[in-house]
Image 1 (cartoon, rainbow, N blue to C red):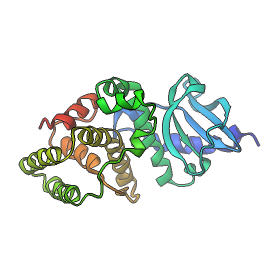
Image 2: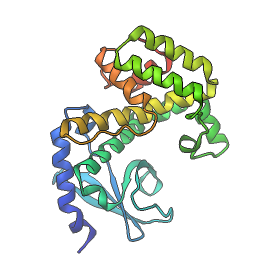
Image 3: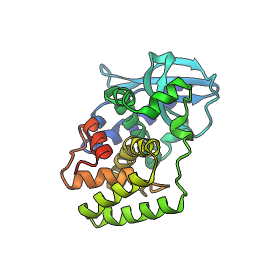
Image 4: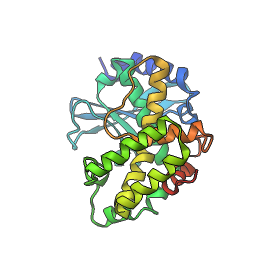
Length: 250
């Protein structure tokens, strides 16, 4: 059985699920390339508008040794540097896993709209280019476990849950004063990039009756929800969303 035949029904189920939840955000009206890593190959499927299904467009040897269970999105040189969702086949086995594909769709959407423009304005991102630190987003030594930072985050969550705009503003300023300017840049970037994706993921999971993802520090997803609830940002203009998060414009 060819890999196209093997995953034909799975892609159909993924598409059907996307249609059910595409009201959550306009980005879900788009389809993005999905690469399935299997048997040493990166098999890139893309959406064909004519027959309205995902079709195999390119096969590349997996020289990166991408691990089983990968859930990611990043530009692939072999596919004209387009941002591609990269997964292994078991992602199709449950609705919970399929929803993670939509989390990665958010990153494709960010990349195709304003991510590179924003990166050019972020000192930490530019520094990483100069030092060829391509994994800075994953490896930056942010003080997640610092006692004072943890206290600030706990207080921040309380303010978010209470929808206390005044207290939230005060806490954001205190956190930013406590951190270095570089740490603040990193925090806001992660809030915008991962936090927004987590927010979309959890909205979909909530609608589908699936357990939400609340792993780790998730101020970004809570911030996105707060800004939306208070009509500060409709979450469609994600470039504006970044600057609201960065400059605390509420």
